[in-house]
Length: 116
Length: 111
Image 1 (cartoon, chains in turn orange, blue):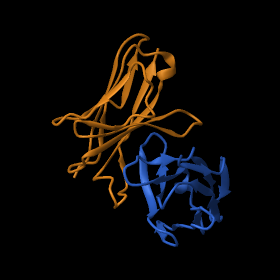
Image 2 (spheres, chains in turn green, brown):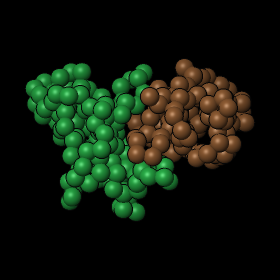
Image 3 (cartoon, chains in turn blue, orange):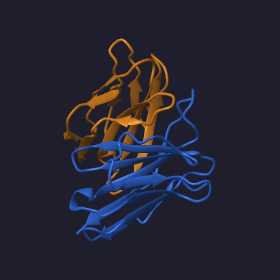
């Protein structure tokens, strides 16, 4: 049973380009979370999605960032017109659900975005 | 809102020393509490968890007890190894919300 798969592992973009980060959750998981990690700042929550629904996007910048989790295929985090400040590690996590069981999340290995 | 506060690092220890990393939380209701570990260049791995007051989570010699009265979930290990060097994150969640993390504590163990 493969874990959470993120690709690419490393992504280099020039300022102004678009970055697309992909996340395939663990088999059977219907909840996906995206986090951004900057040095010395820990993990910052960005967005929480279920299939075809955004549940909570309170941590996502209002401009240039968007996320989706379609019925088929991976979850995508899209950053348009990237700037140097977007350089960070982006982690995806998935879980079975988020109801009464408070199930733990399993993380991918991250995508390290570098904007040059 | 909910939040997690953990001790600042780095924590530097010699092999076989005792480890404590403090974690306190603020939450409404009764969250579940977690410790995750991140090795260099990797994602986060669940280390242990506790879902209700007085529960003790344990794994690989690490332990943490859910203390509702002090809103704490301190991580302990009796004898650390060099291979324990990593960043440790305390986290909480409640039904319907994503995991909220502390800022992480870097542990460095030397032989």
